[in-house]
Image 1 (spheres, rainbow, N blue to C red):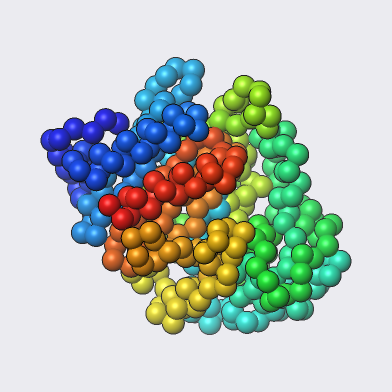
Image 2 (spheres, rainbow, N blue to C red):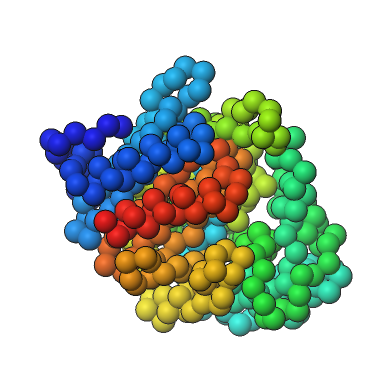
Length: 368
């Protein structure tokens, strides 16, 4: 989407949406185009929310490499591990209702299930699952040799857990941070055992509907197509091979750790609502922001209960998560004063430098 100096505004979901604006908005647009050109992403799209609720959306590249169709403004993308924050909110809401305890063990809710080499659910707490200090190995290690063979593979949650428990623990519970999708897989199983309802339904009823997020959803079993306007996602396991369109895929291997779909704008609305205290009572909001060092996510990154904090170059701290899944990567952050920014690209970054360039666009939008 090109930037014009005329401002066109409309009310959408209670936020002032500005599709064009001068000054720092033009900088964001230029940075997005540079990002696409330098790292050869088919498309990039971004949404930025200012302190007073004004929303600006941006696109660069093409939405479909075959037809050369434009990138849909605020299009749907697979949001990967941003799903973890939604799952964490559901867990903490259940804590607020007195149905779960943060420092209770996994064994209380899933007796005799979590066992393996150095792994014992009697020693792991829900808090340790939420902040990745449980020592549980990452079930998605099976994807290390390539993602494309699993584009249409359905992974039932208990099958995914078996893949994790075939590996040995990464450390003792509570000892150190080690990012593992298995933590949120187990949390999803706990929610379902407790509520007798699917985790996706719990996310929808407790978060998506109350916030009126009309394009945010947890795909159903076997649902491979994106429901609304979206840029196509692409992937190649071998960088020398042609890109493959992976827009249609079975995202079940992400499940409670990474299965959801949203738009950049709706992700901003979710994180802004969370930071404003609209989803959790104050005491559990504080628990969510109680962090541990997470150096594998960045030198100054810290991980709370489903939230990542990073210092901003202009001062202060941002909160978000980010996520990747085959064909899509999103980087996002929000601040306590209402600012929020999300950038999505339609191929996975492959280096720390590429990730850093996306983060720079997000930070620049927040600091502009």
